[in-house]
Length: 434
Image 1 (cartoon, one colour):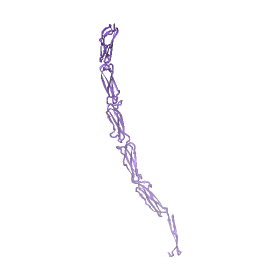
Image 2 (spheres, rainbow, N blue to C red; image 1 turned 90 degrees about the vertical axis):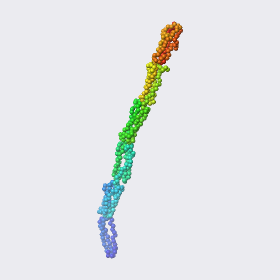
Image 3 (cartoon, rainbow, N blue to C red; image 1 turned 135 degrees about the vertical axis):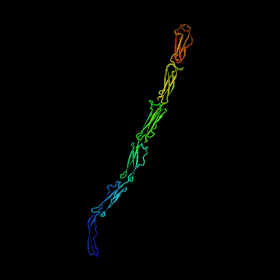
Image 4 (spheres, helix red, strand yellow; image 1 turned 90 degrees about the horizontal axis):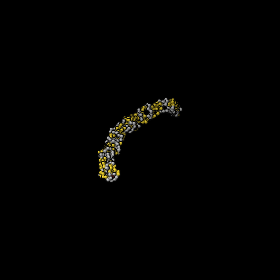
């Protein structure tokens, strides 16, 4: 300050951290040789940044939460240094992913530390469950396994599909699903379905039942019954029952049952055989009968049995007619396999089993005649059996009234009578010619 000017000055002294209570001495000399000394200090110096951390109140960074998250910053400076400023606590409540909170700490030495607290993931909106549609059901029932598909919608994660298949038979089965968002919030939805995959039980009956022959001779009622223990029998079922009135050699009847769920069962009954028509009986023969229409022994009457339905039990039936008379009769009955019958009687049958009779007086039996004697032949025939005399003749057809005994020695004369039934009687008289 004397005016001579500064000759020398101590160069600047740098105090490098860390430093605590350090001093620096400087000297200044002017051109006149005057000098002054000064001591600076003590000086404290530290370049270590403070430690800055964040706490989240129990929240784990990177996880999802449905609650607001408060971030509190803690600043710890180097020893001996105070905090000048630190970012105050901050609350994150906005829905979103990967959110960060910037924190800053400055110590008294001017050192700065910064961090980004996070990531913080928050989802506050609940997810939603929707059921766009159900597969079509029959009267509220499914007859096969049914899959129910819900749409799970999360505002942040998007949509997913939740499928549940019900394959067990049962009424009003409840199916419940859960939809959870990223933060763990869950909503539930339920649906009730009824499943019946089992066909109904069908039974059939035929009334009246066929006899031992397998045939009926009256109208037959064919009926069906249905049973279903779950969804129940549908209206209008069973179907197929009927009454058969016409002759048939093997009708087949089909019945159907259906339950409310749409399952079906069928049954077949038959063959149902009906023969309500009596067989036809036709006279085939009457034997033995001669050309005169008479028989001299029992007569067999034979009828043919014809049946276009169940068929005859026997193709023919016979009746044996015996005795004597001009108007005898015999009856026969044809039966078919179903049990129908038809009868017929053959009358006017003529049987004569009695041989004709002869009255024979000349030539006399054991008579004695002279050679060349003329003898009047005397005989007659009659029939008590009813058929009448067919022929009445003497030996060799000699029906003359007079014979001549022209051959000496023993002789004979025979009379033969035949009735119209074929019965024959012969009488021979032996005599002697002298």
